[in-house]
Image 1 (spheres, rainbow, N blue to C red):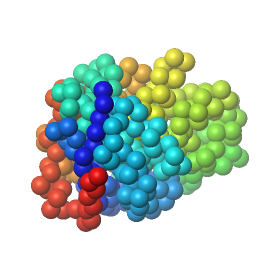
Image 2: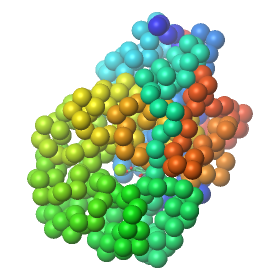
Image 3: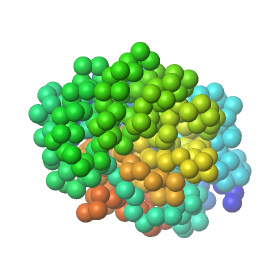
Length: 371
Ligand code: OSB
Ligand code: MG
């Protein structure tokens, strides 16, 4: 399948979250993103770059991503004969790092190819499921009571798996109280790299709470020290920030640094790299699940398509549109089924209609490129 891109447009958007989202690295009220629109062969493809307002989760920001896209990633793919969407990541390899910028463009190429072929993106990626199991990721709250109330709300909406964010001072007591209040809930915690190897006692104190996993307890770029921590715990450690490539995933598995992996295409450079990590984990019997970056409906549609691959056996951080935004930018918006799943769209490409007029009206900055 060859692919030629005749036009690329970038849109810098800012989306207002329905609720502020607080993690160990700060609070977000507005979610910026870059939307990527491609035209080629009479079809259109959309992607979303998930770099944030500041270099907190990773070093990329919406402004570094814009710069790298416009100057270094657009030129090598525009107006040239590409060997299908699976070859795009390789074309972008000369640019070191910047996986979120790459992923926004690479994923748009996958959508473009699916639209050209008239098949769903899930089908093109090798998806095997009609619905994907999902949960909700809940930020740090002002009080434990407020957190308990939010969990009650989400459980009432039908979410059967909850992830809570932890940070020093908001960890053992919070997690214990949540577990005592919801004894049967599928519960996991995410530290976003807020702890040190010496904090092992703190993790031992939540090791008996029947958590599904403990996500990214130690440094963002640490694989080595997670191995000692994993040896001390029965609860699986899941790496998020530390896994930037299939090589990182292989190193983490060889070292015993984690027992499962969170895959986010933005963190690893797109769908092709995500599929490689998925395939490695599937071959080794390591469960994976799909993470989230508070995406708009465009990124969410990509995530749902990817999460339909067979190795995604744990519920993803892919919630319904209304958990994030009052008005999503795709039609129909994503809704939660009563079995805590989201249905995988079956139409061509993303399988949802992108609110292009709205995006053009609301964009803070736009740029277009033709050969
Ligand atoms: O660590 O998983 C994370 C959001 C932004 C940055 C990092 C993370 C998150 C989430 C949100 O946990 C998951 C979602 O999109 O629902
Ligand atoms: Mg995480």
